[in-house]
Image: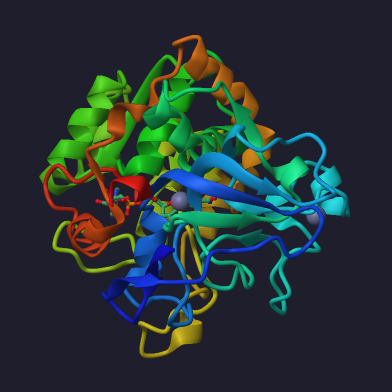
Length: 380
Ligand SMILES: NC(=O)c1ccc[n+]([C@@H]2O[C@H](COP(=O)([O-])OP(=O)(O)OC[C@H]3O[C@@H](n4cnc5c(N)ncnc54)[C@H](O)[C@@H]3O)[C@@H](O)[C@H]2O)c1
Ligand SMILES: [Zn+2]
Ligand SMILES: [Zn+2]
């Protein structure tokens, strides 16, 4: 089969790989119909993780079940399914508690709980930016979708970013009537804004500097805040009678930068502490890492000096971490089916696997109009 492979900083290649096979009785093989490039892939693409060369990328996958192992009972060949990016066993203490993003069984990496497809430090699993993908614990992990091809561009957001954006609002504790500030207008931030409205938020601000992304935020009903036009905290305070917002979502990560592009890993955390009212909640789904090989001192990446003192003084709450997709994906699927949720609005490009190297470069450059890229392996 053909697959998108990591070949070093800012280098991905489309290569021939052996088709995946059933290795354990509860595996399934999926023929990928749609697989997305994610902002998380860019951390690897930019050489900011320890991902090994030769890894097949891709953790946002959906498709048709091609083959199942002898232990698979619920999922059938021919089913149309969404594959959560988390690879979870379903029976460990964290999985049974609903925290599939911290499965205790599926990731052999020292010090890491939780596994994923095609991702640095998340276990030995190939990704789905390929024609086929092996899915462990298939009965537990796979989400069934209505047969056919309807809503493909909406359903493809169920493997990661729609549940992740929703998780940001859940960690923040968004309630009906709340005002919410989302930092980052990338795909995850836009899904957080959409989710905040689904939960009944009265007002949502989305902070970014990319005009196309701010335009999409407005299409979801949010108020756009351009941080290149002035301090985003001041801009939001001005529009909220100086009170700030009830809840905040971080959808940027440790590569947060100022308008000139210089990175400041504490910048967005500090902005959230300032703009969220006392006793308010903050959900951090943008990724922060203990190690970054792109820095002079890689282990300095996790030791971020941020304003914990004000955070404590304001009595705020903060939740963090990879999203447990299975907690939300069935409910979000049903909101898509009934037309209440339209996450596919953010799709900007649909291409074959052969065009993946070019698409990675353009999405990484945040070229105007490149908000979310879908790869369709069959179109290659
Ligand atoms: N927790 C999870 O489970 C999970 C899942 C998926 C993605 N993520 C992470 O979420 C983050 C966002 O993902 P994405 O796909 O939207 O990525 P993205 O890189 O496309 O979007 C990030 C956006 O943040 C903006 N930004 C940069 N500095 C900023 C600042 N100071 N203030 C406001 N905005 C700023 C950028 O302009 C960009 O539009 C990434 O760190 C990604 O790894 C986490
Ligand atoms: Zn992703
Ligand atoms: Zn588990």
